[in-house]
Length: 127
Length: 274
Image 1 (tube, rainbow over the protein chains, first blue to last red):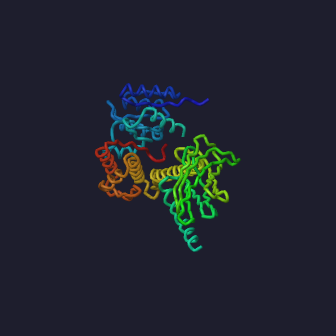
Image 2: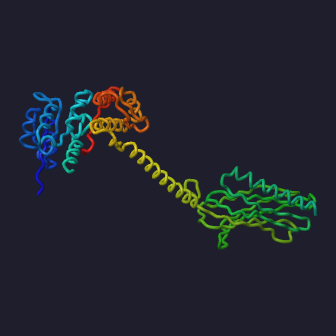
């Protein structure tokens, strides 16, 4: 029997976070929810999810800072991360960080339907 | 004798005129000639053009009639009977006319094919009767009755319709494969394995971003990219040729320009990832 895949959703918008979690549950994944980067890093390093869905603009700790901490961990260096944000990559430092810490995808929320995001997650986990 | 030969030549010329000129007036209508020579001693000669013709039920069949009287200008009254027969010899239509001929008379008689006429091969017979006639004067020709679909004969409709459908399918397939090939060519990620590893990711992000925007807004994406400082691209393919400014800055500027000029935000994926 295949083990249930765990996906960590790090997103400060509660409605969006819960909507993604609901869809993932329907797809038979086990969603974990974190409301900011700090909680996200703690959950990631303790639960070792199969994939992390990460927002960038969040209170307490932003997504890029969280990604750096996760990548600094031996397990976290290889975990697939999808960035789902409203922030365009128009900042040189942000681009530099992205190339350094390599998320799988950098997705702009307004351009993506939730089901398409979940399809990306499924593609990564099936590979 | 010379006069008779001249008249025959003249008849042929007139018949040729009727064959050529009248079909232009009566669209797709067949035109068939019936020629009757009337002589003083009642020697009769007949002929017809023998054209294979087609008409639809309800359409008119034009019959070109030319009467020649070699009787020295003496007027002759001729009774003309037009009949249509099936291939089994059954008469389905008949009508008659009279004509007075002093020297020559030419006219076109139109015979309407009855609406209920079944498709098939028919014979149109024209016979002339006049006083002092020694032998029956009859001329005939075959023609085909065929139904029309949308104003086109059934056989032509299916023939040309079939050709049109096949041509349409061929063109549609050709367009499909050309578009697919073009799209495949244009939207296949370009290879940058020749670029040093530390810079390759930047090249790939730039290239994929240009390709993505090209797919969304067209050639304008290439135009905008070609004006970014420090970014050299192939204006045909969008291939990134060289980066002369910090790569992260170029990416940030390109994304910013696309957002500003096209109102489109840019998402991207990293190569080697799904």
